Image 1 (cartoon, rainbow, N blue to C red):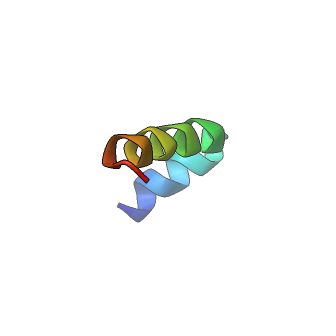
Image 2 (cartoon, rainbow, N blue to C red; image 1 turned 120 degrees about the vertical axis):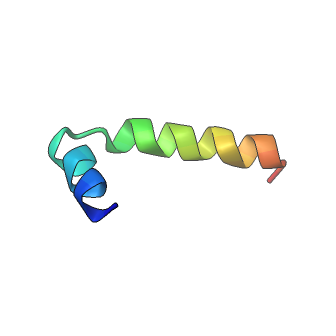
Length: 30
């Protein structure tokens, strides 16, 4: 799990992660 997070950080995909989380929040209705 931590290794996956490190891989995301090293690939600078923070914006993509935020966008994915934002979509999840919209699906939940927050």
